[in-house]
Amino acid sequence: MNLPWITPADRLSALPPYVFARLDELKARAREQGLDLIDLGMGNPDGPTPQPVVEAAMAALQDPANHGYPPFEGTASFRKAITDWYFRRYSVNLDPDGEALPLLGSKEGLAHLAIAYVNPGDLVLVPSPAYPAHFRGPLIAGGKIHQLILKPENDWLIDFSAIPDAVAQQAKILYFNYPSNPTAATAPREFFEEAVAFARKYEIMLVHDLCYAELAFDGYQPTSLLEIPGAKEIGVEFHTLSKTYNMAGWRVGFVVGNRHIIQGLRTLKTNLDYGIFAALQTAAETALNLPDVYLHEVQARYRTRRDFLIQGLAELGWDVPKTKATMYLWMPCPPGTSSTDFALTVLQQTGVVVTPGNAFGQGGEGYVRISLIADCDRLQQALQRLQQANIRYQPVLSEVKSKK
Ligand SMILES: *Cc1c(COP(=O)(O)O)cnc(C)c1O
Image (cartoon, rainbow, N blue to C red; front, side, top):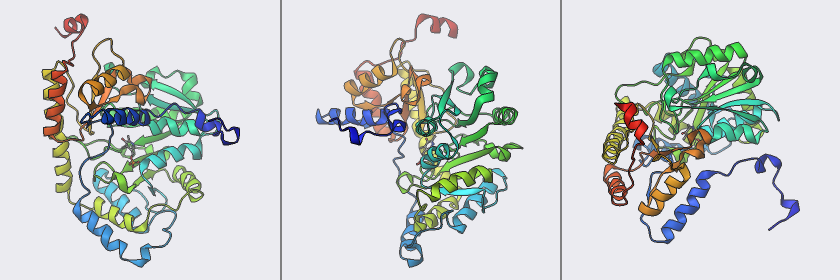
């Protein structure tokens, strides 16, 4: 249907198709054909929200004080819980009045930040592959993206020395995310120091997404951008309760860091929304104050799945490095196969859903992302099906030689 008076604005038509939406169509078709899908495609945690959080929400629901519009900037006690949590976790001091802002999920904030700061034509640095909101937000704002192609030989870290001087001079914002979705890469503290030095030199706003702050294993503790001296002068950091606390449906996240950067986002948001239902902010506070034993349980769950799947994939020829964090494995496609072809083959021949790496930008071509969102019994079935369909990784000769 072509209705000229219902033509979306250019900012919508400029967007590349959302691969997850297309994947949904293909999944629906596979289901119609009677396939039992094992969906390891989305980053949607499969566990329940912790019971104390649910109970806090139920009690808060009963309180009429929560039934009206919440304050624009979030409740004072949730903001305090955020800054207390930051201090406990990272020894970073933040002012709950102005240096912390609750969000309707971090995706909302990440995208709206671009609307608040990016003018048409402004240059934004975004790694490729990246979490889609990191480049879609700037695209909606009319920004130009300079992709920083990540490479396995750099451990999927940004190579700051490879960014041309002229590009860095022009750039306004750098979005980045470690531990990373989709690559599961983690960044050492020195990397964050380099990022801060780079941003200060070229006067670039740093936007770090620390969404996997707590999903770390084997004693690894991810670094917060704000631990780095000088970072708060130029940057902000985004968090979500979706992953750590199995609260993806609740839509609770937050941003912390430079108060001027946060102020711009807040100004935009006061024109768009009223923030999070106050009862849910009470529940979110409870989540941030849960004892660590709860975190250890969640971590153990993903760690067990990680070990199980890496072992099983090794038997099929895949050499997937042991991840230190996130709920993902980032796995090379068999040589000569594109991400999309491989994900489609796997879906059609086995009913296992994985995400083609190019959904996260062209830098993800040649890889697929597997989410650890099913228990080991189900992962075992997935492995059996891959084996039955003879879907294996056969390295090319040069790889075999270089390993020797
Ligand atoms: C899941 C995810 C988010 C989104 O979190 P919400 O708070 O649920 O919007 C943001 N960034 C990354 C990297 C993610 O993987």
